[in-house]
Length: 395
Image (cartoon, rainbow, N blue to C red; front, side):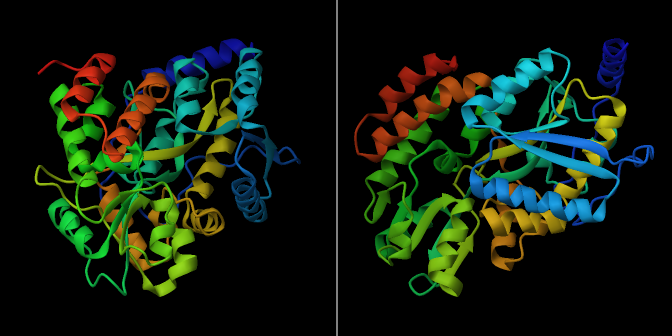
């Protein structure tokens, strides 16, 4: 009977129209409950969550759960940690057997695989509507018109600078290149950081319509930065903290480490604009996904915790403990960082929830970026070679 109920519920959910897209304005700092509390049975309803978070993030999540439990004694949230290499297999086995946790927390790569395998349920229409008040539209990812999973943490590149050396951050890529000659610039050499150097790249990756000309322009832009005076491609942010350079283009999650070294002398700015348009950075997200086996009551309880997780208090707890930027900017207390976050995220692109992006496209692009950063490789040749891998039009 439980199987028939789940099947009926899944068909009803798929029949519902997709929720309206979120607002691009500032999200509201406070969540609103989407469902009534579970029926009082004398015992708290259980919300089991599986994850493979590193130790410091697991501790932060546990602290959020403790705070939630104080606020909501009618729900009992239980965390179960797995090794990263074991979580997906354990979850899939449990789901295929008709069980599993109410929620699973994963990075985008594992989240994409679980969607493709049919082991995550679409987010309910009621919760989708509430996401409009909490999250920027750009990071509410849809697959075939439905929202699968709720992002609770997001990372994308920002421009950091040393206020003692740089009086005002450059607003355009041309100005950034000129400033590098005067103050020095370090760029993290990976797709997550560099995709915003060509506005069309992220859009086309997400849409699955990557064009050969776009690849060529992107690679040519990287080559021009690699050859520019004062520019260095390095995975470490040490050059900024050691005051060797004045500018750093790196993931937003670098902020905690940088601020611990530079304090008030750390400047944070949105990404510079390209001549061809707004920066369109790729965002790395961590998701809370709903088990396809959840009953209505289990989903209701899980939604209450997810809404708390996206609220200002929990998002601030998460950010301050982990350094991982929250999905809701209300959790950021630093005004300059919050302003840069809002300006950049309005045009961010969530990483494509396609397994091929992580298994094939991402490593191939990262290899090409490293080659260009080292002053090797030819943009035209690299674009021609990779366009066939991505199925890009030969324009």
